[in-house]
Amino acid sequence: MSNVRGNDTLAKVVALCKRRGFVFQSSEIYDGINGFWDYGPYGVTLRRSVEQLWWKHMVEDRDNVVGLDSTIICNPRVWKASGHLDQFSDLMTDCLDCRRRFRVDQMEDPGTCPECGSKQMTEPREFNLMMKTFVGPVFDEEHAAYLRAETCQPIFVDFDQVRIASRQKLPFGIAQTGKAFRNEINPRFFTFRSREFVQMEMEFFCRADEAMAWYDYWKAERWSFYRDLLRFPEETLKIHEHEKLAHYAQAALDIEYAFPFGWGEIEGIHHRGTWDMGRHGEFSGRDLSYFDQEHNERFLPTVVETSCGLDRICLALLCRGYREDMAATQKEGRDEDVRVLLSLPPLVSPVQVAVLPLVKKLGETAAGLFRDLRRRWRTEYDEGGSIGKRYRRQDEIGTPFCVTVDYESLEDRAVTVRHRDSMTQDRVGMDALVGYLAERLV
Ligand code: ATP
Image 1 (tube, protein in one colour):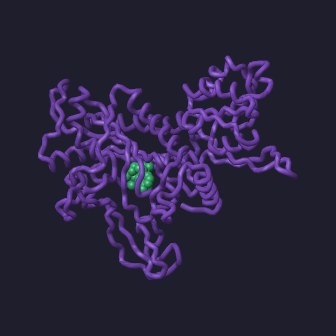
Image 2 (cartoon, rainbow, N blue to C red; image 1 turned 90 degrees about the horizontal axis):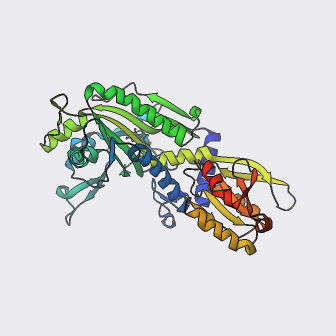
Image 3 (cartoon, protein in one colour; image 1 turned 60 degrees about the vertical axis):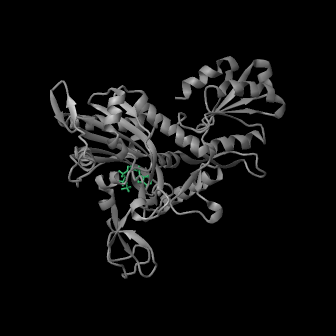
């Protein structure tokens, strides 16, 4: 998953994220901690906007999916039942020369170090990915607990409570977004493989004989989320059908995005059969079966899952949006200069509209517009520095529209709207501005 041009783009995205406060290393003043990232003001807004879009698309716009917000720490038996404590591990090998550690399934030749070419590799060993902690005053095995490695297990565990409270009948889904933790051996590619990340998962419970149709349905819905809502061009996405399936699964696929470092999974869609409900029924000793009144039958629900990583989607948006072109400049001795822009979809741009008075004196009119626009959209007001510099800053943080108030505005009651991607400008009457933006901020 690497090539020079690609990694160059990734390096530029990483630099932009730090410079503009999207994403930066956690605890940087202490030299950071590998695999953990903080989202600054623009990053957190981007991440929340994508999460809200997902929530609306998956929960609020549907009658047959409801939400859940479970705890990060559960009874450890949950992870025994799910198989995470016994099986959630990667086979790793260490290079005795350069001391790097690698996942065996990602190596072309597990006998040769991909970093330094040494043949001095250790025998592959299992490493469990669950993060461990202790609950209560005594730090012993009896009090050991784990940070959840995925958000879906509590959904299975809470199935009956949620079903009864929400009066849902099969088929229906339960969705949850939140933090997941994995002690990844090789965190890399910026936020792509982190140790703390956000998942957005939906478990859809249905009859076994309908599950394949639901699997196809969710595959189409999720594809449309990326193509139509997040505006990823189809050629940057691909479906990777799994040939090797988990023993309980009937079908599984990944939706992958063309990252600068290669294709990478952003979402998995899985037909999980009755495995999860069966295991939690068995380990808890509770009857998790469902009584289908229409068919007068009792059975364990079959599960179709959609599972995506919010950080990976944001990274895909940042990589996709990063562009450089040439634009006019006021820099001495130059007519043109490289312009960096983030072409983010307007729905998720951290700032959707920027209001910029040409000079401070026009601040009163501009501030009035700003107050009106911010009731509708994420709006920023900026009156410092040359207008050219202010445009560049908004381009870099991905603001699709800049509204400039100039001297003429006082006479013609109109403003200039500048488009981020094309840099074209429209003169729009102040009275018509909300309608103009509403048509385009979709
Ligand atoms: P991978 O093979 O890349 O490790 P996975 O198959 O283990 O991923 P799942 O367990 O299916 O991933 O998790 C669902 C989603 O959660 C993934 O599609 C991804 O978007 C996200 N995800 C998983 N692990 C990480 C991680 N370490 N950092 C960021 N996001 C992750």
